Image (cartoon, rainbow, N blue to C red; front, side, top):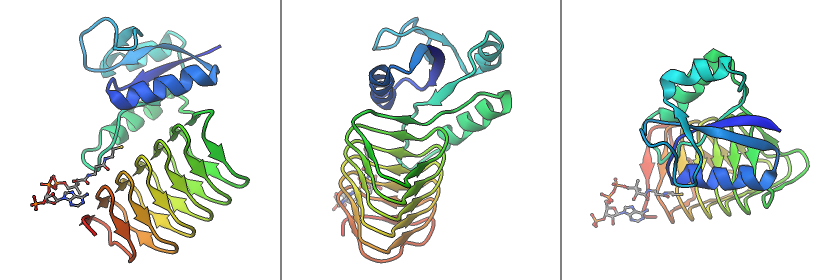
Length: 204
Ligand SMILES: CC(C)(COP(=O)(O)OP(=O)(O)OC[C@H]1O[C@@H](n2cnc3c(N)ncnc32)[C@H](O)[C@@H]1OP(=O)(O)O)[C@@H](O)C(=O)NCCC(=O)NCCS
């Protein structure tokens, strides 16, 4: 089985770990993170820090996944992506077996599709994004890179979401609406009109 390393050691990494275990396609060789502990909460070894990524690659592990969460702030996922690509790692997407992808749905490298998520016909999700548990990306949507469509949120048809955007838990973006890049949509918010890049929008 192909060996994979995971970057990140928080709750999101736990979800990704479970999906990888259930997929049965990769052997988790270990985690890379800041922690000095020898194992993480799920009992997997922590085999190094970011500084060891090149040595791990040279030891023969060529596949990695960034399992750091994203709540609309910081660029840890982007930095990790850049570092891994520079070294030469392959970054597959991980799609939990319980997720549903329709015909014509496309998913970029390093993207995670979590339990029970649905990506319907002709929707395109870019690289390094997260379509989290139970989220619905309806037909003909475009989700950019490094974005997070959080748990239980709904993008109705023909919605566009830019890069580095968080659509918060249980939020709804109605059909045809464009959400820019670097946007935070608060949990439970209904988005009915275009949101320009760089905005925080919540409580509606
Ligand atoms: C929108 C958000 C980013 C605002 O965070 P913040 O800037 O720290 O805001 P605060 O917590 O200081 O709240 C400011 C005010 O807005 C209200 N508020 C915050 N988020 C809200 C939301 N999603 N809906 C309605 N009201 C909200 C607060 O109650 C508070 O009101 P008050 O001043 O009357 O007490 C955050 O609350 C949020 O919804 N994040 C998304 C979380 C999420 O979906 N996580 C996904 C996990 S998978």
